[in-house]
Length: 207
Image (cartoon, rainbow, N blue to C red; front, top):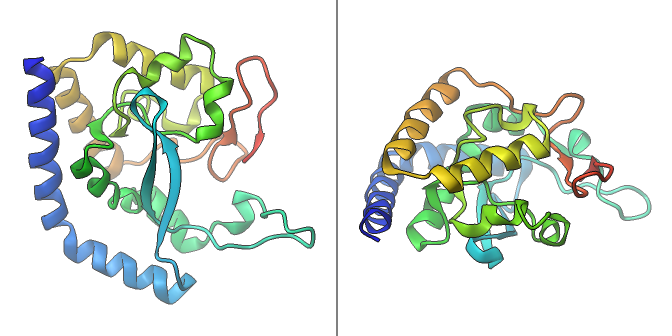
């Protein structure tokens, strides 16, 4: 309990400092998104938090809202803009999630929050990734990010859940800085982002 309390205090302190320090950058990014893509500047989406509880994740918008003749949204590859690719490569699109951390919906370190519709697709073991708060970055992000398969991601998430410590969080945070400086694994092979998770043993398709 003492470690969990210290983790929360650390989340609050670091997120608050980063939010203040990054405020000029966030204003600049917001202006670029508005000028290049218009409103809304922020992308809001329901994601699964600790225990699978939904919360509204915040990101800078990286894609246009474009649909085909039948009203179905176009693929991520076709909607992702050049500005969006740069924001993803530099991870600047994730900065608004510092607000999610301050709200207590996320932690600085933890499994990345995924779509609510994935909840019914996890195996019981994979669902244990929700035993902790989702994070801005995590063990899977510094060990392959989107270049690895969903099953590999979940195995790394579960390893984090079973081996969590403040020392491990510090290690992940330091290596996240390195990954931002030397970005790798931004997208899955052949995809603009990551194919949709259809369940272990199922067929993944573009989300």
